[in-house]
Length: 417
Ligand code: HSE
Picture 1 (cartoon, rainbow, N blue to C red):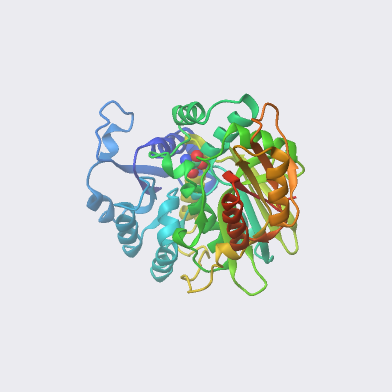
Picture 2 (cartoon, rainbow, N blue to C red):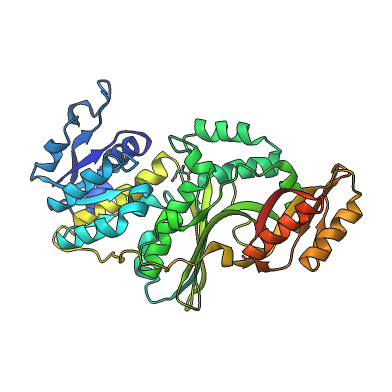
């Protein structure tokens, strides 16, 4: 029998306890021994919980108990998780976590500590909830060079955008619903501002390309400025708006990483991924496109990924599973403004007729494709530019404003097919 501890009894932590208990027999069969929860760490009291006797408020009790071989960190955030995980690994205990902030900010360092102490640090649940993605990328796709990763990595924002697209629901109503359903982060700003998706693409890019990408190296935009008008223009263009995290290897060896709302063509596999579902497309040089799809958030999907990591650690108590990437390097992530892309713009030109406004855009951008929607005000125009360096697009947008056409929104057009 192996003794384990769970740190944090929130949505995911309670799910981990539930899965370990309800699937006890099948888990024991797969792990080749019984897995027993010895402690649950939480600062709160849970007197009525069926696990009441296991609760402790003392991290040191877990750290110093030689019987504890594996610890699940599901507290979330950096503080105190980072300090706890570091000490546990240094003390020879394997750690599994769903904490994407921890892995995105401290992954390289913690993987190195795990390696030095011959223990495992696994984080399948940190990206895509219940979708297997870390292990497949690390093992099954290992023979490939990853050309590109593109994903819908945040369930909350995908849920909100789906409600806006399919039911014309307002942003605020859809967000409240996502929070009620337990999809959103404690502070939903991390979801809607794109930070959660950023952490996940950082983890995937680090894993795929072997060098840590930190969140502050990634241009990150959320969905708070997306309106039902933009949704209608995307429909006329031939697609939908999705929050996409994308990482690509450039010919010069740099990595291009971005999180932003994008117009995605209807023919793309990612366009049909709705509600809380996530999908991650990995383009390998040998495999071509492989798409991983499933529930990216929620108690049991995420807990099942945490428990799968616990089982893997129990099966590998004597040896390490190879999972490693090096620390970051100056100049490794390319400058976002150098990306060459087309964009969609919605603008208003008070006192000007729409033909004149579109004419100005057409002249400045060297040709644009105009878009339409029902019931647009007379002074509103929308169009898609040609592929241009983003720096140049921004300069031309300023010029457009200078000539009396104010841009209300600007969204990237993705190259996802
Ligand atoms: N808030 C996250 C999401 C939870 O909505 O995807 C899973 O990481």
